[in-house]
Image (cartoon, rainbow, N blue to C red):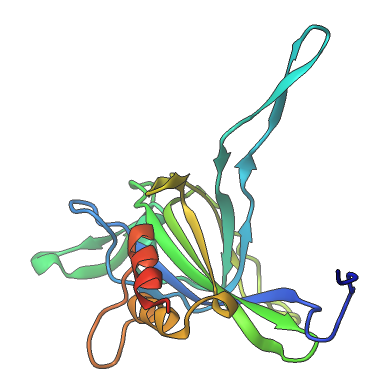
Length: 228
């Protein structure tokens, strides 16, 4: 048998940062999501799932069993700006004139369009730093809630407004597993060809293909087909 070793070289792992944020507004009249749009200026994505509470049940004066409640994936997005297509997700709409041309007016208090997200967090270790790998997060069926905005006078220490939105999700069916609204793809444990195929879907390609959000089944199929 081998004795356990702590903090060996290349095994001191950590996760940091967030980048490559992409917004996929959900189609209103058809199934699936609209083409992805790069989300510039994203500063933070916080994951705050709820549920999983344990409720003990008693019998014969002792704990008989523990029931666990269902989990809901929730979170928040922080950013200095946001894609135009996120306006509908935030309950806004651009007023249009003749020929459905925008006239430069946006109105709030409208229906909120659900959306999907993809973003990347970096994996690091003590030898390769943040070049060690990354995790691609896929979020489905998210809905943003009402958010506050503080507009302050410009002074001798000006700051850019950082917007923030809380969101909650509705899980989607996942064949062979319980419904979920959050997938994580670890680059250090995924076949490189399969990973590239998934990234080409998420981010699009120069030659062909627009950015799209694949379903969990499509992700599984790509990984299964490409695995050696």
